[in-house]
Length: 193
Image 1 (tube, rainbow, N blue to C red):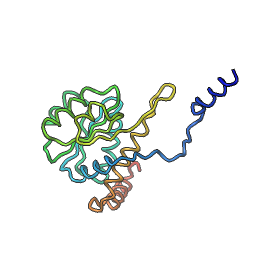
Image 2: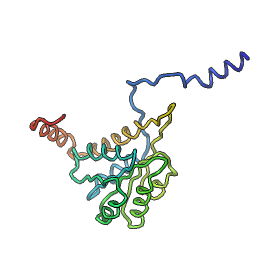
Image 3: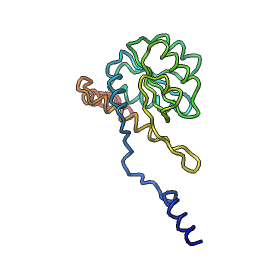
Image 4: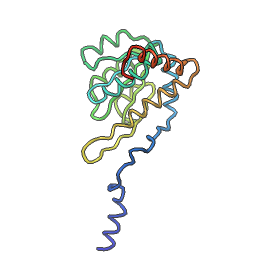
């Protein structure tokens, strides 16, 4: 009995620890981040999609990206719109798709269709073997965990920020000036900043 109790305490010790809210987010150490950033910086237009819970990630990436890039476009999360949006894309454009298990069929079909049309795509997903990763030019796997009831999705926000920071590291983006100008313009009209 004492051995079993000690083994349980050892094996399940992490389950009782409270995460440090002030800890730095875990960085995704992936060469795919650098490749994705290069693809974004070279793209004519960047179209971003996320459906259901992944829509928040697409919206965030579009918002943060548009502070520097004028060519970011959010695809509405609707199965009836995606075919028309895809028809506008060329091989010079880029599709960024977000999806986690269970994978949204709209997103899976869109990435598969982009692959068939030769349109490059970046998949930001929770598993290397996800259906959108299989058809994407580049896949960024973002590990998520489930606590008691809810999945911890914050790593997706960190991944978006890592991708965009890597994009902004390219001096050709003129990111620092563009972000400053954006902030000043919003401030000048008394917007929310």
